[in-house]
Image 1: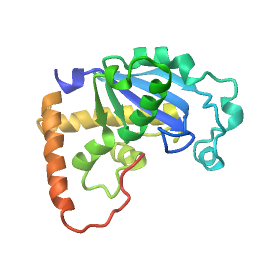
Image 2: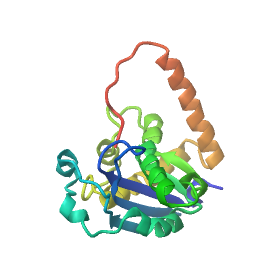
Image 3: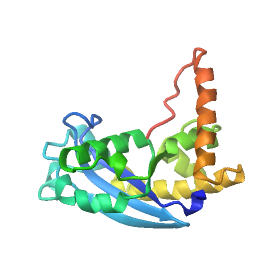
Image 4: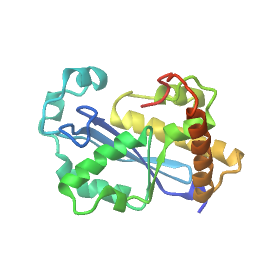
Length: 213
């Protein structure tokens, strides 16, 4: 199947911290579906994490305990979220983070793991490392700026998910220009880039902190 016809689900989560397998939980979730050039905000909700939100997270996201009090828990929305994600390619900017948190949330309340719900995974940070090597940074702000995408409500789930969806669509155009038109071609293209990166990592190098959300 050609990339531009694949059903994608672009996800962003806001959380109480960085440990999905520990005490940290999701405080906000958005899913934007993308197919054949059409992006739709299919799900968005604040969520009650069942634990206090640290002050430094509130400073970053603007989400505090009062905002999530009385909101649904993940268990309340798990079925709806699963229906939106089902048989779609899971996409996020730093997908390991978002997929890790949703996997942990589904693992607590659902009979089926997230791996069995989605059709695959795609990380726009990983794409940016190859498509946009000339950029000094590949976080969402930098990649969105490169593509002329405005991020409304930065560090909130719907704003970041909509921006990532717009970035994804521009990346699909860039991939087509490089002759990468199918999922199989994309998989091979990314694998080739990983092999080259491993060879480069055999030499001493410093990190520029260029990746991440």
